[in-house]
Length: 495
Ligand code: V55
Ligand code: FE
Image (cartoon, rainbow, N blue to C red):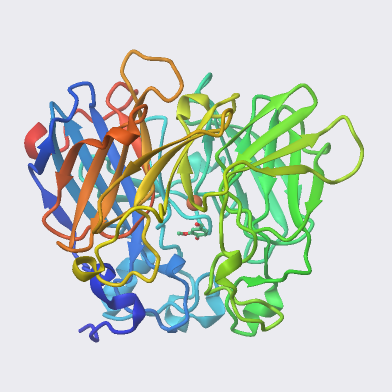
């Protein structure tokens, strides 16, 4: 028995639905280009059982993986909860047994030895395998056709960190995956392990690092020559966890911190750069230019997450939970520990963004992300009061010229993160499609948007309709059918 969901996490569009789903042949409006052939994977989470503590983080919702298989202009959909040990154990018990996000001291004693990850953050495809990722645990391998959970993956025992980032980087020139885990040897540990995994999925080098303070390191950047670790700048300690507190707090006294090391080195050259108060969660991309490292990233001014309290007891400040497209420049030929920083666009953006993945690690011109365009209408009568939390546009942000090309989704919709689909046969940066889901708040269903990434202002070229609300997405991933190891069918129309 599940107690009826209530509270703010359980109203309207975002009420948990709690089912696995399949749609064999989806409704489509418009024409999906024939050269789009692949699967759009999404990962997010929803509470399968309500949280034990009302102030627990939504980062702790049960992982849910879904797929839109697109082929010959037709689309099939699947969605499944990730069968983590936590999910299965809760289902057996019929209730929530796990306490605060990443505080095992607040769990029921019965689940002490179990992996507590919810695996709810990002899909990854590497070496022909599909995974769901969460930075507090190993990847969970998922069957790309059925979306069944196969189990945790430690690369045949060669991957030693207990944790694995939700944002590995794949070098488009070699297929090498560069990845890491922080809190690598246990909760609140200051170990950061960096790994180089070849295109066949074999772990090559491991580099062990120590961090100057234990922070969320949610994402990172890799260039052809360097590896860059921005701290989200949250803080924790074992004492904090033992006291039964929320894992992360915000301490504005701490400097913001970015570590840079050579990609081909052993880590002994790492330099820690310091800056003013910043919440540095996601990046767009970075490249090396001589002795300079240039990082493009959507950093926040301060604490973005209202559920991670300020350690000084001050209230969360929404006016500083704002993200902009920033350019950071590090001059490694100079001593000192500062960087130069510039806001390139004054439009506040969602920090869940993408670049054309064929340019990861390389100089690159465009960043794509969603944002709220206040000049566009919102139909509150039909869509409800979203209290300003509507993301109604995709943007192509030209980092060279400052131009912003915009796509508007509609006056009853809000967008999730977009992903980039390269156009078949093209090599030009940004030549392809943007794909992503939108919540139709008036009709209470999810729509998949496909737009031409070079003609965003012309509107979408096709929309795919689900007859229900698909769960909230955090990150998505496009797996093109041309890539090695792609499943040839996914049930539904394509089998
Ligand atoms: C983020 C998301 C997470 C997480 C830590 O967006 C940071 C940042 C959905 O999970 O666990
Ligand atoms: Fe992320």
